[in-house]
Length: 270
DNA sequence: CGCACCCCCTGCCGGC
DNA sequence: TGCCGGCAGGGGGTGC
Image (tube, rainbow, N blue to C red; front, side, top):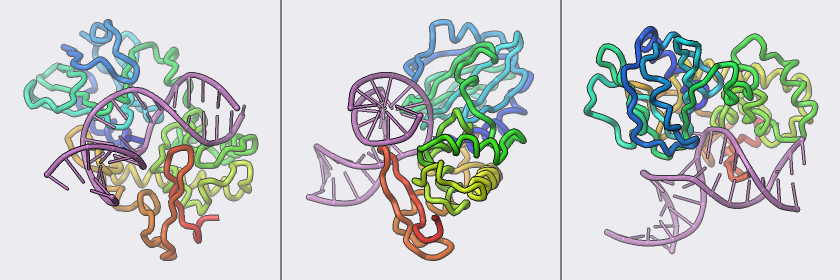
């Protein structure tokens, strides 16, 4: 579920609350996540102080004293909820963390596609394998052109590849390509320089706007206080099959590719 | 290398 | 009303 804007929204909410706080207790209620929690998981966090909350792609990262990072990936249905009482735990709770000052952090995940790992920042494969941050200066048209020029895959699949650009998922890939006026199934190789430049501009603009609207809530996503995002109200193509294009009124098309839906306007996107 | 397909897991929704 | 298939924002693996 959560893509970069949702994880960034969660990060911004949790950061002031978690920074400087000690982890007093960790209870594993359901270790069967996508990567099963190891028997030592709780002891690695116990007694640590959270020094910083940062994000890489869709990964939320808590930097701990003694140099390690607690990496949390929310998968499709993961939520990190803040509470002030050990009761009132959410359903499907997998991990409950007690923090200094009577604060609780609940990880709940219905489908259990999320995972958590603890390790040295420089050694975590989940971080090392990620491509550039799309909102950083390092993400330039030349960077994306280099990948496009040697890839026969569709531009949509390229944008979904976390090794190229970190943080884009199926919703934002579609909104980005609509803004850039490029058909999602165009081979990346076929994009002109000017089109790649439009894609880079659209990535920045769509992700920034989605962060401003606190992410997209379709069915599952909520922030750490249980609040919905609002960007779903601004979708131009995602989930809008048959509805009129907001620019030209052509019904939005939907195809399936590789088991996933592809949405686009056959008039506005070329 | 790219892709079609399968898996992980649960809930929900629409059709019959 | 009830069951069944399809579908869902995540990633990874296999075999062609």
